[in-house]
Length: 259
Image (tube, rainbow, N blue to C red):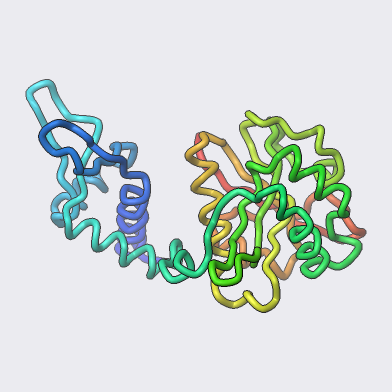
């Protein structure tokens, strides 16, 4: 159990990282290239970060503004924390290109799925083709910049439902493009690329992308040995799932993006 000081420091660290990751260009006539972040966080924490000279909160006569600016020290510290917490890895982004899957990469995805999952768990070639055709915007691939080949991918479908069911694996018609939630259907990383942090980076970038799309929650199921891995990525273990996909016992996990 963390003590109060450690807990407060963790909250400050996470807030600073989120401020850095969600910053946008100010683009005003006086300071065209300055970046700002919106004040959607605990005010006490923001004041603590300002006292540490990691950010600046402008105040005018009309009252408190709804945005703030990171100082140069704040930006540097946020970048250090991202690497320290393993949320974003510059090395991985230099080695891999992260983007939506392309139609011509469908057969690659099918082969990778066969390698990464046993036959009773793997998505069939037919279902994979349907999924890419209908919901390619929910496929995030990591492409090796040297070979141009997919090293791993994460995919899902959107829905307004709040509980995972096996039909999401087999019925692409359940995909609702503007659905509030995402049901993750598979995280695949080829064996030769494992142990490099690629799976973690795929999940991180996927969550941030769907946060930007104003999704509410992300759901997945996993076998017991993978529960701790997803917990480290921020997912909450909801216990045994009703899913019996592939004749296995699964755990349901979720991640809250927006309330």
